[in-house]
Image (cartoon, rainbow, N blue to C red):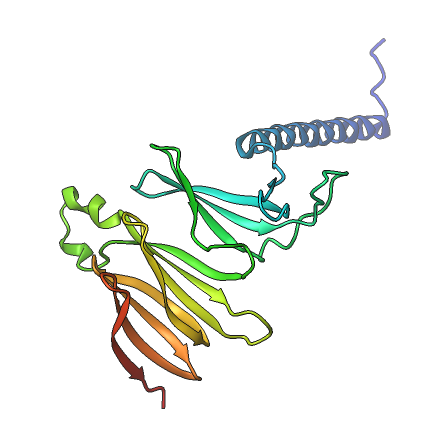
Length: 233
């Protein structure tokens, strides 16, 4: 006698069972791949470290040191100084101050080991700062040999908030090599752009008494040698 054919219902059930198991297997593979990718990304980024807290020798105030980076083509390392809520007696762990409340910049010479802070103390708020290459001009005409020289940082600037709720600021500029610096503008509304047209001058777009100016600063004597109003109407 010939075997009786399997009922149609059982064949349909087997077919959908196989499909379901295939889908489950596919989802499992995708989940495994996702876990592997997340592990690799975590290993690439590395563990996030809390900012280092240090105590000032004179005042015993505690500050955090953040954003430690090389200054291009100088042999210097820059690090930002921010206030911290941690007590000087070291009792317990505390949350640091706002990362936007920067108070100073420390420059470390990696050759000599000497370090210096740009501002004399950590009392004022740094609104903005930057390191400037010696020459931004004519980059398209630069040869490969002098491109690195044009990128070498020679100067820096800081926009420092004035004490109190004045919403005014001072502009300080300085030279990397000679460690010379000076406050060149006081009581300004803000700085919108800073660059070096050549190795000896800094150019800025600045707001002063609610008016816009283009000004040039001579780095040999820290004097404003040109000031041109910019009309917007």
